[in-house]
Length: 313
Image (cartoon, rainbow, N blue to C red; front, side):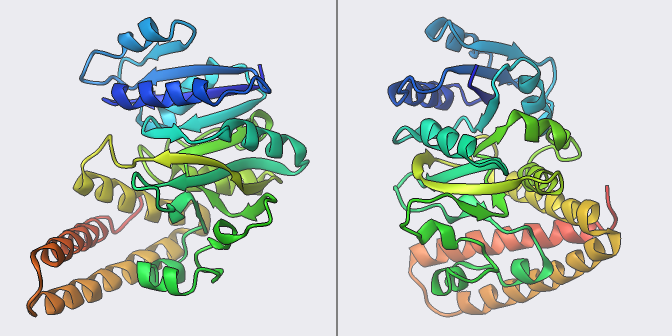
């Protein structure tokens, strides 16, 4: 088998159905693919319908919610592909992205991981499809204005998204929404780390793959729509993300750096909350007020998480 495509389902059957259909729609026959769906103890019990619609897929039902990392590792155990593609349920192929990624990854002797262009539901570019490993500096300065004003800055690592030479480009991090990896690299990196229930497991895997002697790449030849955030509520997602990122720093940069990261980001959250509150005092339209309230709620949640997670867990 050439490529094993692994999905993790948690109340996302309708999205997975559309995603699988897009895989078949854009299959060229260049690579033999198998599809594995791991149901992560979803409360809705309609996952069996996928097997009725797509009898050729492998359906694995976990008795408990293993988290994103654990469920993907479970799917890997039933796979046979020389290349693995971890694909979120809320994705839809726009072109023959799997072929493009696999072809480029296979041609790179040092290639470990390959990512592709991700689009939002409105077809705008999702710049988070490639990232840099989180540091105090790039996380303190991270905001849409700076990223749009200086997209070529090494702080963000998104320069390859705007290159038009068609060649794969080295990147630090590929989004776990659509992450292709050689089986050899996945095994040498000791799989997804189950220290993370959800979020940052892609950061960690990309880091371990580099430590194992491989390189991570991005190609703009493949395009996938990533609807995003369909398995968790915004507040819950923010909480899990900001528990996970400091844990990544603790694990890979040391506890002292992790502690400094928490302090720096807590300070950043206080400053942003103050700025948002000040801006909200001036007359704004209803749409702008909604956006400000959403940003305020996000940063308040981040601050609460950081203040209650003072030590590694």
